Image (tube, rainbow over all chains, first blue to last red; front, side, top):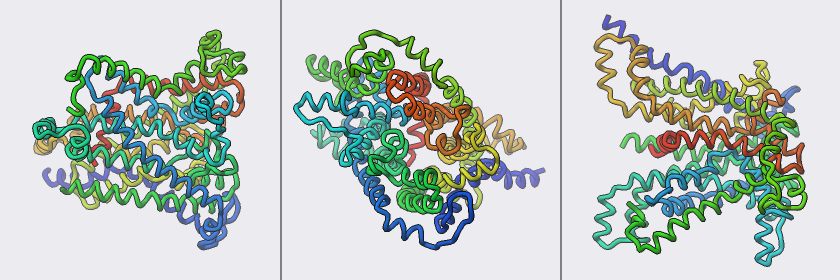
Amino acid sequence: MQNLQSRQRQWMPFVFLAPAIIMFAVYVIIPICQSVFLSFYEWDGLGEKTFIGFGNYIELFDDEQFWVALKNNLYWMVFYMLAPPLGLAVALFLNQKVLGIRLVKAMFFFPFVISQVVVGLVFSWFYDPTFGLFNVALTSLGFEPIAVLSDENWVTFGIIAAGLWPQIAYCMILYLTGLNNLSPDQIEAARLDGAHGWKMLRYVILPQLKPATFIAIVVTVIGALRSFDLVATMTAAGPFGSSNVLAYFMYEQSIFNYRVGYGAAIATVLFIIMDIYIAYFLWRMLKSEKA
Amino acid sequence: MFPTPIEKSSFAVNISYRVAIWLALLMWLLPLIAVMMTSARSVADINAGNYWGIPSEWRILENYVEVFTTTPMAQYLMNTVLITVPAVFGAVALSTLAGYSLAKFKFKGNTLLFATFIAGNFVPFQILMIPVRDLTIATGLYDTAAGLILFHIAFQAGFCTLFMRNFIVGLPDELIEAARVEGVSEFKIFWYIVLPLVRPAIAALSVLIFTFIWNDYFWALVLVQSDEVRPITAGLSALKGQYIASWQLISAGSIIAALPPVILFFAMQKHFIAGLTLGATKG
């Protein structure tokens, strides 16, 4: 009896894990390997695959569109980094106990809950060259109107600004929760020592918010690299591909241009960039697990 | 508490703070408020460029009725529900089992498996796109709800397993050990002891991934093409192309698409935030 039970205990964890492992392997792990494999082939998605070694990668290196997309992804990452500090600012502003504050906090969070397609529509309209609020505001301040989404110099920043809207809300919630879990003793002790304002924030509060900051940065980097929905709904990478990002470039090449192998190579590059962050995240996570 | 509670400041500061938070909220949600207003406008207003003022006539009912009668919006909405609900159920079921296993059993490869689930969760969708699309076509599931549901279950299993495992790790071992000593079978332990204890985590997780799946756009584009299966995000963006000048209809459609996750968030706010931060702050 005892023997049967202990034997059961040996294979039981795998029975519990099996459905998740199988699904995850079929839809995530194996496809990653297949994509990397495909990136060494020339393939239109239907006909014969031709092995071309690093051909796709060499072509990418000379493809102007690729560099535009990569540069834009870099802009996304840099400007998305505004989300954690701005989210913290909003969280500090709202971290009070006055009447109705719960409702205000909840409504500040709205942009994160709604679909990015809706966010994209809302902002396309905000930027409308003739009647959009953005240009109404510009002209009333005496500036020339800007057709943000059809201007090569502005378009990427316009889309990033739209993306920051939900991202700030996300970071705000992370920080509000963090602020909720501060140790009151430490704050009181620091207050007695005469710390307040910036000094308090810098030396007492921020160190305690470190886990929230870590997560906020991770999700923001991932969000910046995943940017697809907004680019697809707001501009479809236009005008002339100037707002392209790797995620959309890949989709465009494989679905519209039937260059599946080439698309796989773009996806692989994006995957490698993301991997650097995943590796860092895992390393941090497992380190804190052991501590 | 930080910053210092506002109650300790002067009366004037208190009053201005209480006004300021609502003003800030108004500014923050301005783009959304404008869309709500537009969904109540007449075509004449739109053509005259009255995008931001008070509508010259309120056509709330007419516009929403028109969206549901002249566009397939009702169908899209239904499709999204039929995709989201089973996908949430499946992902949560799979990951509760897997999370329990990773949290409470010691075996070789445990950490490696856990790390794989976490890593898979951050992967860019594009690296999965071609093989998943081919697999879905090959199994005859392209352009069906089942194709999308299966993918969502599998992909969300990564995040959900991370989440459930982190929750279950914190549960006391004594109950499980006691049941084992009594000779209760492993499956019964899971069903009668573990499952009731993880209910709050299941609630939090379900609310969270409901919104993730509801708002999915990429896979809706890649795995589905007909109006009969297309979920509301892809539907809305298709409508945008067809009704290019009918902003009042697009706006009404946007509000319809946004409302269910917003309502769910409001109703289950505590669970939602717990979900967002339990999966998160454990780092």
